[in-house]
Image (cartoon, rainbow, N blue to C red; front, side, top):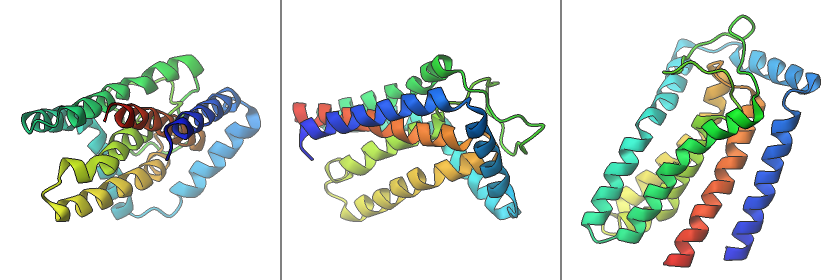
Length: 207
């Protein structure tokens, strides 16, 4: 994709994310979020809950994975790849800033079953940090997998499937576990892909 299109698409996604963040407190949107969470949580088996917990727990290791992989790439003299991965890892703080900006309350445990608890207490939840982080981090891994593991085509395929799978599953897992509303998840994807496009613009420009 041309660099200019990456920036334009990122801008459109960002503006859309801002609009949804502003509208997220609207009573009709709140009701839609509530009904969506109830519908998704109905009929969950213990196995599905455990799988969703596993998907969510990976997020706590992203900074460590990013730093370790960047160090490995730097040792392989792939410094541009290492820098790109470091930037992707540093962007994981962005959702915390956005949550303070939009101040959209998290699901109430008295209304939505809470099946997964954050390490730190949370007040605001838009956008989802998990969805944002997986989209940016594993999107970067997916896009760079051939350059990172140039000598291991089999590993490229595995990491590609793994990355796409986590990006796809994390959204539904956050709603399923009662950790986020539907709008939180949508916002996570919007801001996440916008940030990812920005990172890829940087990568293509400096390559």
